[in-house]
Amino acid sequence: MSRRPAAPPRGARTQRTRSSSQLRAWLRHHRAMSADSARRLLRHPIASLLTMLAIAIALVLPAALWLALDSARLLDAELDASATLTAYLESAVDAGEAGRIDEAIAAQPGVAATRLITAAEGMAEFQQALGLDDALARLEDNPLPASIVITPDEPSPEAVRSLAGELEAMAGIDEVRLDLAWLERLRQLAELGQRVALALAVLFGLGVLLVVGNTIRLAVESRRQEIEVVMLIGATHAFVRRPFLYSGAWYGLGGGLLAWGLLALGNQWLAAPVRALAASYGANFSMPHLGLIGSATLLICSILLGWLGAWIAVSRHLSEVRPR
Amino acid sequence: MIVFEHVGKRYGGRFDALANLDFRVHRGEMVFLTGHSGAGKSSLLRLIMRLERPSRGRILVAGHDIGRLHASQVPFYRRQIGVVFQDHQLLFDRSIYHNVALPLEIRGMDPREASRRVRAALDKVGLLHRERALPIELSGGEQQRVGIARAVVNKPSLLLADEPTGNLDPQLSADIMALFEDFNRIGTTVMIASHDLALIARLRHRTLRLREGRLVADEEAA
Ligand SMILES: Nc1ncnc2c1ncn2[C@@H]1O[C@H](COP(=O)(O)OP(=O)(O)OP(=O)(O)O)[C@@H](O)[C@H]1O
Ligand SMILES: [Mg+2]
Image (cartoon, rainbow over all chains, first blue to last red):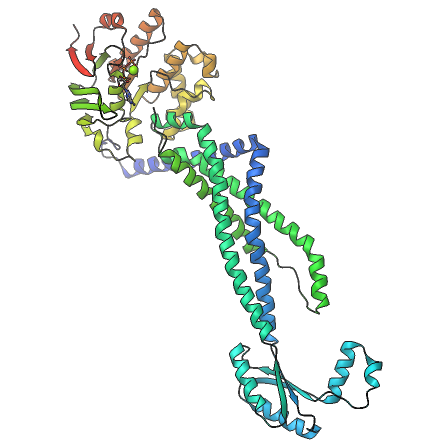
């Protein structure tokens, strides 16, 4: 009566056919249980849908935040690449001297490129941007100084700031402007957002576990007698657990698909106003998409969460269920 | 096959349901277990199934101390024992056929081979024509016979039965006992708890008599 009764020596071949038939039995049970648990879910479509919807809502929030941050990161990179300094020259500096200063700056270490904007060019740009031809044309003198736009080698705030200090010390330069403050603020905001997203993901992941766990707990409760009987006649814990794990995975899959649909819907809904907003800032911004990898990650995470929630619920229960 | 060494079972710290049991049952034997209600018959069978563990002493089944089985081994141990429960323990949401097939399903037996065995077991208890019925549609006696079919479907080497004739009329009781004798004849060790003393007396097998958890008589077949 041992687990493996002493058997006469067997040939390798029968050994192999035996283990392969065990594998087939195992696969058969998996197939049967996945179908059976799907059928049980379909038998109560509204209740199942509600559970999946709860999972979906819990998943949508962190996923949406993650998407938003992802697009913010893209924007950030773009801003980095376009980070420039503007050196305004003293108004006494004439065109020839301005050219020399431009060359001197270009020769500085840490400077990638420079562009000289003469006072006249500056005025033209200004007029074009504002559409105020008439008003400005009436001005006698050009009040704008010549300026040099400098693209640094390295767009990090420290490098840019020290470069600004060096430039300011040069003769003929009145003022150096750098728009770092808001860039830095944006970056800090993104970091904060990332942490919030992570915390939300953990929190809502726990929420999914609870939703699935509770649903599975009720399912276990309603099949308690069946569990007791199969354990009486020699079912392993794995055997008892299997249908519930599949239920959890189905819930997870359904919730993940719903979440994906909700995200796509939200994307559609927000796309037009976001595009209009971006256009008003002159930015070319497209709505972030989950893409293939993002979608797969979302689905795999939701399935795993469903499975795990079921596992916890069943295991907690199995230790309580003692066959009578 | 079964060895009890100074086995005691105490429930709730005070009440001795079984005390100082010492006996052995040999392979291929058929043994009755009798005693008044509450004498400890079911408790003794539950110890052998390892649904309970003895408070003292040890139990060997087929040479193995079943108290030392790891929890993960217990299901495999139980699969080798056929049990007829006092309260049937059938699943009411599935057909007779699927109830009897359950032990084979747990073992992962090929469905075709399983179907052959299930039909043979149902035929043996005379219920083949009801295989599609639900347990609720059967009489108490018929349910009992389904329980017997499920217990023997995997041809266990040890068969335990707790009041298998509790709900049956005398004729059917005799038939069921004859069935157990058939299994015993092909080598199965059989242990039957019953208080149908008249029937037991007629059948002439070894009888263990319990009173308040103690073994008060061990009578060989006359
Ligand atoms: N889980 C338990 N907890 C506490 N006491 C128990 C438990 N199981 C059984 N008992 C007690 O142990 C004693 C023996 O019970 P058992 O069920 O073994 O008797 P039995 O001989 O099978 O009786 P019956 O013929 O009525 O089935 C009874 O007094 C019962 O109250
Ligand atoms: Mg009893």
